[in-house]
Image (cartoon, rainbow, N blue to C red; front, side, top):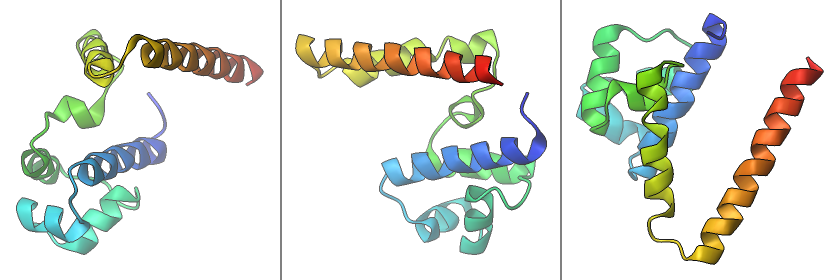
Length: 118
């Protein structure tokens, strides 16, 4: 597992990504989760730790599972990724799928090379 500050920044970034993908502002999410906008901002920027009850409120407000935000390195979480890839390419033609696959392979190679350089 990554260090604590990186973990909270990652969780915050995922919350923001989901919020934005749903077309919500921080104020919208705060209202839906019965939290204040500064709390949402602080969490999204990884400046504060998230309490379990706050995490649950955010999951409910965004209508996502905890795993959608946490994405831990566990078999159950890893099994969700193929579903996301399938959804990603569901409306693509074969040429688009080939391009996405090529990009994914290049990214994978780059990530692994970067890990070896450390």
